[in-house]
Amino acid sequence: MKKRVLAGIMASMMFASPFLPTVVQADTLEEMEQKKNELESQSSELNNRIQEQDETLNDLETEKGHLESDITTLQVQIDETVMKLHDQEQKLEESKAKVEQLKNEIEALKELIAQRTGKLENQARSVQTDGSASNLIGLIVTAESFSDLVGRIGIVNQLVTANKTIVTEQETDQTALEANEAEAEDEKVAIEETKNAIELSKNNLVAQKAEMDDKIVQVAIQYDMTEDEKNTFVKEQQVIATQTSTLSEEMQKERQRIIEEEQARQLAIQQAAEEEAKKAAEEEEARLTAVAAQEKAEQEEASKKVVEQKTTIASSSPNKSTSANKSSSSSNSSSNSKASSNSKASSNSKASSNSSSSKKPAITPKPQPKPEIQPESKPSSNSGFIHPSGGYSTSPYGYRIHPITGEHKLHGGIDFGGGGAIVASQSGTVVIAGYHSSWGYYVKIDHGNGMLTLYAHMVAGSLLVSPGQQVSQGQQIGTMGTTGSSTGVHLHFEMYKNGSRVNPASYL
Image 1: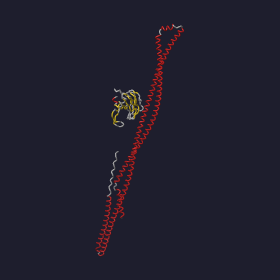
Image 2 (image 1 turned 180 degrees about the vertical axis):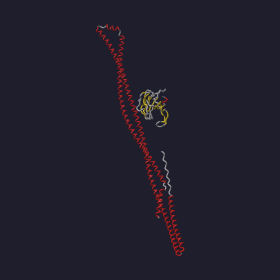
Image 3 (image 1 turned 90 degrees about the horizontal axis):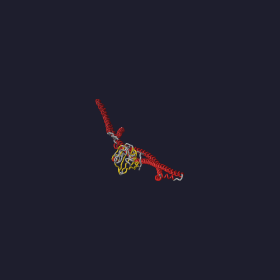
Image 4 (image 1 turned 30 degrees about the vertical axis):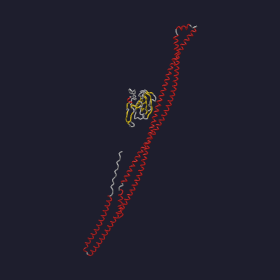
């Protein structure tokens, strides 16, 4: 009986122990778990960024390889063009030598023609002064014989024929002179045109190479920036990995601490339950002993009464009925006493059970955090400059928000849209015809008197002039494009006066 009571009390206390509060440890561990999840999420995001940077680096590496290959091809073309230009320069030198030779021949012909002309003029003057009719009659009369007369007439005929030959040769040489002069001039013009065309082609190739070089520089800068960003992400990821590792160790220690505390708590609860069960068992044993003693006393009392009744019955039979009733009453009293004791024990046991049950803490669920919601040229003005294209103005000179950088800065020229040819705003000398990282393919012309104009964002390979070349007003120098720092096809037109930019609208 004692063992059953002790086991029941301990079982009820052990059953109640897991529901005792461990709020502080759970909250701390939950915070750590949440922080660890955040760090792992950050690490995953950084890993995705690193992968994106790797892809960008690979793309830049590929683009750089293509650009280097294009530059190699362009360099070969430039070398071939330079060789052609060298050949043309040699031919030009040969042509110049030929022209010089033709000039010498022309001078010799001129001198010969001059000599013949002088001779003919002398003969003509002689005939005019000495060739009268009386002289001819005297020539015939003074002849000594017929044969002498025939000889004199033959000499006159030879003189006349010689003069005719001289005149014919004079005309032939004059024609040859004019033909040589025209040939020399034509050859010189052809060589010059070929040289200019090759020079223009070379200038375009050099400008394209400059564009490729600039792109490679930009790619290299972007590659370095991307590499630096990747290294920054890797370092951040390493820091997060260290924090995550440290936090995992702390969480492991915290879990171990909680386990140890829980084990200690459970042990303390068990020991307390054993002590309480032991005490309750002792109390129950004492109670049962008291009940047993009381029952024994009652039984003894009943036995005494029975004996007394028997004695009374034996001494007096009329009193049998009364004694029997007393015995029955005593028996019932003893039975009622036992029932009362059992009822009290059962009531105490139920009360103890209810008291134990009422001590269980009410478990309220912890509120979960809410999830976070995650050219046709226009008429010139009095200044002598004309519109450089037939397009319409899209952006005037002055301060504006830059369409690429977003900065508020001076727009130092006028933009013309619409596409098409770009012409020189005024005659002048080409200063630059090349490539710039911001202006793209552009041309700069010096008009004298401190005035210069600039034409930017032309189509690659469309440059029609080269440095040092003279251009006339309205002559096409290129085609409207979108090279350099540009958001669309247009012409960026600037004007400079004594080295400073001015508003072109004042001159157009």
